[in-house]
Length: 629
Image 1 (cartoon, rainbow, N blue to C red):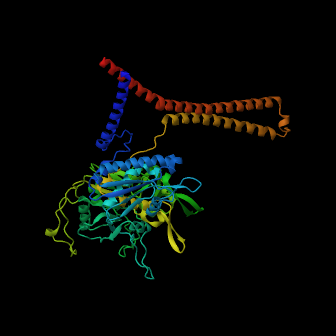
Image 2: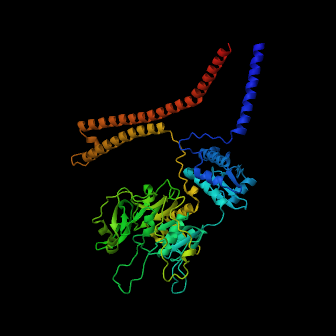
Image 3: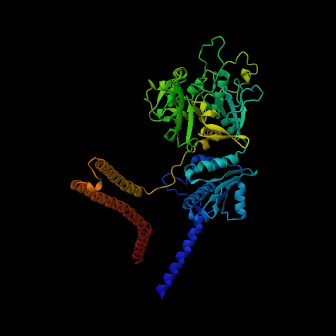
C-alpha cells in the first residue's frame, strides 16, 4: 500500500513539475530560439534585425491564412505555417513595436470581407468554388496600408526580403524622390509638328507610378538632400561640376543607378555641320567616377553571345532571311543572377549593343554581376557594328574566346573621391555656382561604404527592346515580352531602401527533397531508358529488314518468308518479350526500393526515436534506483 501511494505521489509530483516547467519556460524563454535548418530559414538576417530595432512607431501585421481550407493543399498549408513562424520571429525581435494578428478568414465572414478589401488574392482550392487566403497586410499609425496579396511558395527564398521591405516602407512612408539626369529623351521628347509632346519611354512611365521623378539639369553644383536615388541615363561629357556633385552625393550615402553605353542605338545626334562626315558620338562612359568606384568599362567594345543572340530579318542578295544579330542579346537562365533580389525572379532581359563591365585592377569594392553573357562569348568592335550592315558579316572574324561577360553589376564597399585634389574650379559661365566658402566640406571617402548599380546598356530601357503597345478599348496598353522594366523598377526600389535592406540576400531553398529517393529513381529510370532505347533501335532495324523483304519483287508477303527469316523473326519476338519483362522488373524494383526506403524512414521516425527515448528514461530510472539503494 505504501509503495502504491509513493508511486501515485511521484506521478502527481511529476505532473506538477511538468506543468510548472512549461509555465516557467513560456514566460522566461520565449525570446530564445534555436534554428537547426541548413539555411537558417527561421533566423532573421542582421539587416532585418537592424530595421526592426530602429522602429519608432508600432506597426500591425495582419496575416490572412486559411489553415483549415488548405488541408487539401499541403503546399499552401505547410508554407503558411512557415510564414507564421517567421512572422513570430519578427515580433520577438521588434521590442514590442510589431503586432501580429493571425486571421483565418472563414467563408462569408467579416474576416473574409476584410481580406478582400485589403486586396488579398483569392486562391481556388477545389472545383466547387471554395477559396483560401495566404497574404499579409501591414498598417502603421497613420493607417497607411502595404499589402502582399499572395505569399507565393515559389518565392520562398525571397520571403524575408518581402516582409522586411514591407515593414521598412511602413516605417518610412514618404514617397521617395529619384533625380534623373538623362542625355536621351526618356522623360519625353520634343513636340511633334502638331505640338504634341513625345511621351516618356514606357519603362520610365512605369517607374513614375512608384516614385517621384525629378529631372535635373546637366550642370548643377550639388544634388538636393531630399533625393535619395540618382538615375543617370547615357551621361555624355557631363561638366566637371556635375561629376563632382555626383561623386559627393554617392560618398555621403546616396544611391545611384547608372546606364552607360558604348553604342546607344536610341541616341540619334544631329550631324556636325562643320564636319558632316564625322561619326556621331553615341557612347557614354562616366569614366572618372567609374574608375573611382573600382569599375572598368571600355566604350569601344560590345559584348556578343551567339547562343543568346536575337534572330532578325535581313534582306540579302539571296533574298530575305532570318539571321543572328550578335549585338542584340536575350539574357535568360544562367545569364541572370538568381541570388540578388533585383534579378532573382526575372525570366529574361533584352539588351542592344551592350558594353563590358569588369572590376578594375586593385579595386577595393565588391563587384557582383547581375546580367551577363553565357560561357561562349566574345567582343565586337563598336566601329564594326556601325559600318557593317550585314549581320552575317559580323560573324566573320568573331571569336568566342571569353565567358560570362558582365553587362550589369552591383558595386559596393569602400570608395574614395574621384577628385583627390579638391573640387573642380567652377565654369566661367556658371553664374549660379556657390562660392568656394559656401561649398560643403569635401567628402574624401565614403564613411559607411557606398552602393551603386551600373548597366552597360541604355537600349534595354527603350520600348522596342521589351514591349509592344496594343490597342484595347481605345487605349494603348503595353504588352511586355521581356522583363526590362521590371529590372529598372526592382533596381530603383532596392537601392532606395537603406543599406540593411540592400544587404538582404536569398535565403536558399525551403523545399528539402528526399535525395536518396531521387537518386534511386534516377538510377532506375536511367536503366529503363537505356533498355528502352536499345529495344527501339532493335525494333526499328528489324522493321526495316522486314519492309525490305516485302518490297522485293520475288516476295509474296509475310506468308512467303523463308524458314530462316521466320526463325529470325520469332527470335526477335522472344527477345522483345524478354526485354519488356525485364523493363517491368526494373520498374517493379524501382517501386519496391522506394517503398522499402519509405518503410525504413517511417520505422525510424515512428518507432526507433521513441524507443531510444524510452530506453534512456529506463536507464536513468535504473541509475537513480541504484543510487537510492
